[in-house]
Structures are given as C-alpha cells and as structure tokens.
Image 1: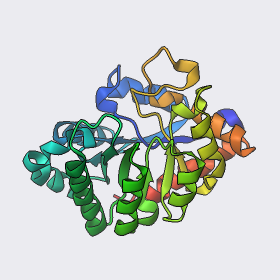
Image 2: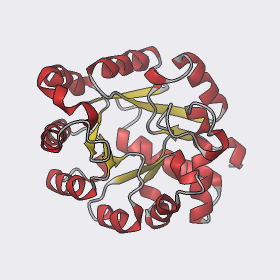
Image 3: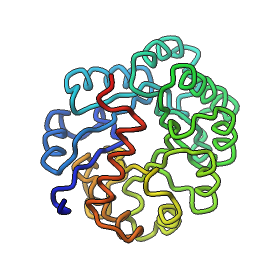
Image 4: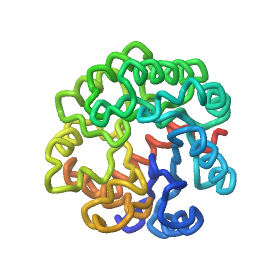
Length: 258
C-alpha cells in the first residue's frame, strides 16, 4: 500500500469544539485517508454532544463520555448522569489527572478518576486517560485497575522512563501532534521506546496541531503528519504505521462491534 493510500484512525478528537461543522471536518478527514475517529467528551454537556455527533455519523465516529480532571469538582452534580451515559458509550473519558493546571484539588481529581476507572472495569470498556505532570499517581491508579490495553494514555508525552514503566501495565499509547514539534525531544524519545503495535495516533482536535499546521486549528485530516513522524522515528514506512495504529484503534475501541 502506497503512503498516499494509507488509512488512518484519529483516536482522539473533540469534534464538538472543532472550528468547522462535524460534517465538513469529517469530509476533509475522509479525503485525507481517515477511516473513523474517536470523539471523547470532557463533561456531561460535551459527552452528550459527542453522542449526538456519533449517532449522526455512526460509521465514522465513535464516542466516549467522561469528566476531565479540570472539572472534577463537578462529579457530585454530573456523576450519576455521566455514569448512565458511559453505560451506552463506546469508551470512558476523557478523564485522568492534571497536576500542571491544578484546576481541581488533587484529592478530588484522584477520587473522580478512580470512579471512572471502576466504571470502565465493571463495563469492560476502554478508558481514555489524560495525564499531565501526574505520572506517578496515574501509574498507581492504572496498576490497581488492571485494565491492560483498554487504558489509553492520550497525547502521551511521558518520556522514555515513564513509557517503559507504563509498558509493563500493558497500556495503549496515543501520540498527538506535539511529537512533530522541534522542541518535543522528550515526546519523540517516548515514541522510540513504545511498542509500535500498542500505539495509536490522534489530533486532539482542535488543539495541538502538528508542526505543518501550527497556525491553524487542528482537525483529523492532519493526523497523517503525526503518523509520518512516528514512521521516521521507528524506521518504517508511513503506510505500515497507518496499518499498525489503525489496527490497534480497531482492537482497543472494538470498532464495528457496537
């Protein structure tokens, strides 16, 4: 398969926040070789929006429901409804821990993350994990949950040391446009030690556009640029990276089984 015929999956894009309509964004993605995307919510409202987008485009959009650590204090109000949404979603998330911005108290973040991990375990669903400056606590939480490859470390930038530790847990790594930045050596060293058959690519639309699109809002059509960087690091053809990362996305998110 030639590089220009590669078929991609964008494992993490917030279509509800994209700069254009979901229809237009998805059409451009299809022209760029993107088969389907995962659209995770970050709270109750955006999880409902993700469900609606997926229902409108069931062959091109999977969806997840969850509460982002920035808004962990909203769990007491939103948790019951989110749990009901999670029961019908394709995955749990985006959730996790963020000790960089600390917009919610850390003990609350940890409690809400554990609650969503428990839901993922009980429902046997994948979980999309946000981890920023919280590697040790995320590691401990995932080690206790024992979800294996169903735990997806989204927009992973943990560096080689933490990547090797998380490999032991059997998790899945998802790399975003940051790996294409000239200043992102730590993220590229993480790619170098990550097993190619346990990795995915993502855009995190509309955030983190790859280097070639730094002045634009991100969108799924740009995911191949991240894949090309992974191919360079791993020393393999771009088409092989597309095949491997798409296969992992199909396996982890169980695309087409719903």
